[in-house]
Length: 545
Ligand SMILES: *[C@@H]1O[C@H](CO)[C@@H](O)[C@H](O)[C@H]1NC(C)=O
Ligand SMILES: *[C@@H]1O[C@H](CO)[C@@H](O)[C@H](O)[C@H]1NC(C)=O
Ligand SMILES: *[C@@H]1O[C@H](CO)[C@@H](O)[C@H](O)[C@H]1NC(C)=O
Ligand SMILES: *[C@@H]1O[C@H](CO)[C@@H](O)[C@H](O)[C@H]1NC(C)=O
Ligand SMILES: *[C@@H]1O[C@H](CO)[C@@H](O)[C@H](O)[C@H]1NC(C)=O
Ligand SMILES: *[C@@H]1O[C@H](CO)[C@@H](O)[C@H](O)[C@H]1NC(C)=O
Image (cartoon, rainbow, N blue to C red):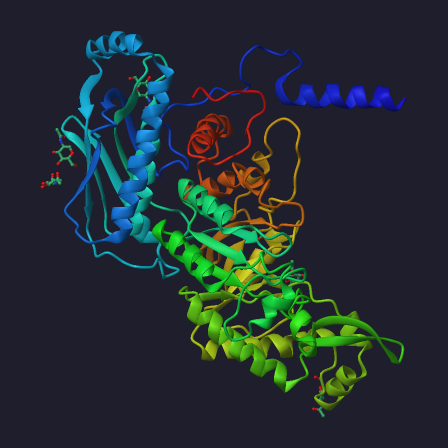
């Protein structure tokens, strides 16, 4: 009986995906030379250049802009690596034959040896402002005379270089690298396009984080939300409070020393990615208590301490002087104007059990635990405001009625009611970032690679006005790390987060799922070629190279 049910389930799943008849060949045929995420405007043709990868250069009149110089080297390598891939694929005899073939093709425009890159503005050093939307705008022209990329900012040039590298494709029948004559005018729909990575539940080494940042740049994501510490471990090495990681990290090998944190910030910056650190409190702080138990609430069973520690104790003045020192350091280490303060999932049972907390509440006329939480968060918000940083908070802080400043971003995460939450947050005039529909830890493993549900989430499909929708800054895919470590995090995130990336970059009307599936098939193979171990997106298939 059990067996029969399994068989039935299996059959119905297969039927729901591809029809009951299995055809030979891949489930989805990959495109060639299509861009992910889809540009705002593209006019394509069938005319093509063969890219002369060995001589290929980026030409620019900008001198001494290290972000551009490094980007040119990266993309030169990517194009050269693709060339080596086709080289290995063809034997030399074949190449000579094919060269003749494309030379005789009326669509052949010649050999492309350079991209002329021009920067309209100055060479910025950090992608600072939240309102960077206009600044990622770029234009690519590949016409009869050559190839051009221009933008007013380095960040736009970075996005354009990525697009250019994706336009270069491995021709199917002829063993060559090609690019078609085309015009692209592109700009991001949302300015905040993020990926949260939790490095507390499992430690994620710097090397994996760099791979993650590479993949983010291949998908035009621009915010790395570093959920760096949590209950389970405190891998961030604080200069002011080194005991936090000495006692709170899993081991002394699994930490991020100052130099590693700086390396990540620079690595991200070179790819046009901002780093927003999260130091979540007053809940999710158990690891802080390994070194500083006095920060946390002592829990009671009846009238006696039971040895357990709860959330940060909001009643002690010392708590706030500690936090002032800690945040002062964090804000000096991370150049971004924003800092994520967490504020989610605060359990009240330990606070409720503790007699000195009760006493404090009576004395200060704090009548319930939400209000006690608010008292804490309000204090932390004041500390951070004094340090000239701008807070991001999880939605609970807004829901509980904490007074938040106009520039605070509310991060919407709770599943199944996010439309209503976005309505409420923006109705109150606050900035919002959406994550609720992009939790990458929710896995459905069968068949297609589980990206469609992310692709179908449209941030503006809530009941608000135009003004409300304009308060949505963007969103973040979230990779909580309970069930991932360095060995599976890359394939868990990619290409599933690519769905979020296209939703946040491309126009609202980019919803053709079949077209997306074909482009994502190509994009995943492209990521694989570039060393990103992304999992297959669409069921049965293969990568040509
Ligand atoms: C590029 O041109 C070829 C013909 O040369 C055509 O088959 C292909 O569809 C074009 N690709 C794109 C992405 O426009
Ligand atoms: C790039 O193009 C512009 C305008 O067409 C031209 O003036 C400039 O010389 C070109 N630069 C390079 C390095 O080719
Ligand atoms: C090709 O594009 C460049 C840059 O936009 C432009 O200067 C040039 O005139 C174009 N060539 C033709 C033949 O349209
Ligand atoms: C305590 O708070 C309640 C409700 O917030 C208020 O009605 C009351 O006047 C307050 N009492 C004192 C002593 O401040
Ligand atoms: C939104 O606000 C309404 C009215 O205050 C409230 O009833 C509702 O629970 C809120 N929705 C969410 C998801 O917080
Ligand atoms: C959505 O809009 C309709 C019509 O304006 C309104 O009746 C309804 O209450 C709204 N729902 C929410 C969740 O705001």
